[in-house]
Structures are given as C-alpha cells and as structure tokens.
Length: 244
Image (cartoon, rainbow, N blue to C red):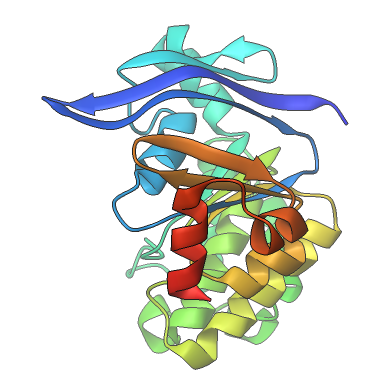
C-alpha cells in the first residue's frame, strides 16, 4: 500500500500547555485508523493538525508528497480539498436544503455545473441511505441523518482521505449505528479514514490500526486484536479496564 500521509515530530503547544509532542506516524492508502484515548489526550487537536485547521507548533505533515506545514494558504487550500473532514457537530448550513448543502462545494470549488453537482449529490445521498431527503432542511432531520448528510458532503469533494472527529458522540444511542454503518461501507470500499472515536466495537471490527493517544502523544500503535487483547503499555491497560 502507498504511503499517503507522514507525520514527523509533530508538536502542539498552547502557552505552557503541551497538548502533544514528538508524534511520529504514517498512514497508508486504504488504511482505516481508529484514534483512541482518554478525554483531554489531544486526539481532536491532533486530527485537526493533520490538515492544518490547527497549526502545529513544530514538526511536519507530509500529504501525498507535499509538506503541508510549508505551503502558502492558497496551495494548502488546494490540497485540503483532498482531505475531507466530518465534525462532531455536523456543521450543515441550516438555510440550505440537504441537496444544496452537498452541491455547494463541488460547484464553488471544483466548478461543477448545477446539473453535474445535482447528479453527484443524488448519488451520494443514495449511498448514505437518504435519497428521499434531498429537498428538506437540516432542522427536520435527526442527528444521525444530519451526520450522514455531512459525510455525503465530505465525499462530494472526492477526497483521498477522510478525517472523522468523534462523528457519533453528539448522537442519541439509537442513531449511532446508522452512521457507523455508512462508515463501515466506506472502509469496505477502500476509503482511507482516520477516526477519533469512543466506539470500541467499531474500532475493533473496522479499523486496520489503532493509535492510542494519552499523556501528550501516541503511546501505542497496534492492530485492533493486539491492542484490545494484549496492550503493551500500562496506560493502555488502564484505559481499556475503564471502558471495556
């Protein structure tokens, strides 16, 4: 598998507080990575630093051979199109219908015609199981449906990698499954994904690799069966005892 993303000596610091330091890791094309760890471990900040929504204090992020930390804003924006992001809080435009939310970026950024963008949006809504919701507004949807629209919107830019920042943590328990099912389908179709999550079943079943973050860095990188059955570090053992 081709290496898609490499992180070298990445550090993020706010004043005296070091969020994470000396993070070194890589992501291969088609790999699904679950980023686990206790609250406050810097998982979301680290995810946002990967596409420079959060500027790292030091270190390098190389994506598809380009060092993002060195690029001018315009060049960075072009590469960011290939790094899709799905947030915890959906971030849909309330004044636009579902299909308009999905069409907006492909038309503005990729200059698709209205007809091309409409066809793409309809196809993606079918993929996430919401073909019948294209003309409604986000407020009329459940949280799980809104998050599936947000995934479709991210997919509309044809990204090479998708970053998920706790995509199910704002949802009622009965809605979590419908979002995870869409994410499982994406994984099966070969999408490269980095997922900050508290859903241990998803991490165990769908991820190729676990990154365990705690105490200012990645403490452990392992296959799910190894991480969940025989974690190496005391910190990971403590974490798993509390949540499993």
